[in-house]
Image 1 (cartoon, one colour):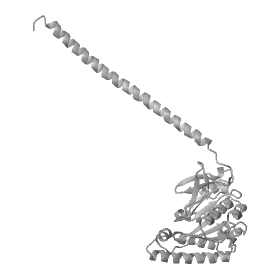
Image 2 (image 1 turned 135 degrees about the vertical axis):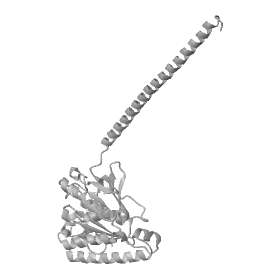
Image 3 (image 1 turned 90 degrees about the vertical axis):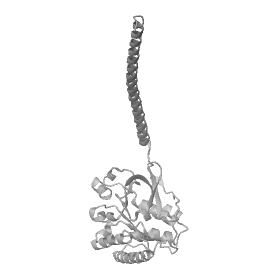
Image 4 (image 1 turned 180 degrees about the vertical axis):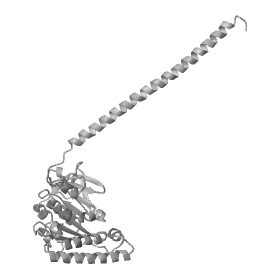
Length: 322
């Protein structure tokens, strides 16, 4: 190589080395800038998420349930169902009880907080939705106070039961009917009343048995054990019990609740009573009448139930008397 070309070649090599070094530095700068950008973006997204969470918390905190809800009939399609609305949840959505899906129901809480009102709500709603050809109701009230006024309506079977002897005979009759229904359903290749009624023209009428203040029955251990046995026998065949009490003791609801998939818990005196009804529901913190927690399908739904009075019963059911 001539001496004249040497400076040019050296210059080219120097330029190439500078260019490569600058390119490498530029790539490193790009990586640094990218990391900073990603960090800023991540922090921004986190801040936006925190903001959204706080807005949600504020919205949730601002939601207030009404202290009292006058009774309102919420229509439901009666075909293939046996359900009623008992009130509204925190988001103002109706809360439904479905006997076909969840079978027997337990209602418990301290006196004066809405147990009787919920029973009235359920009975009115059932009668408005299902006529006497599609539902039979049996009433048991050992206090002989709250349920007898419903005797006059078409779906109710005879007079309200308030004597141990009649209650004992009723359990025998229901157990027998449950076995007869089981044979009829199984002969057709089904396992429950829902599948049977959906496919067969000869429908089996569901039965709702309402027991107000079951503690008075549980004082008689033979009757209590007979009731529990009957509940276990008949639930798949369309005979469902609504069991209510203001004394949620171990002797009263300890065994009965093993047969109740869904439960309504109203205010209780303390956490012991609360846990006896629904574990860790903290029902002792409820202060408002009609406010309850509905335990169903693994969820605990805070509910304001309807305040249903006898005037509502008479008004809504005046055309359904026998």
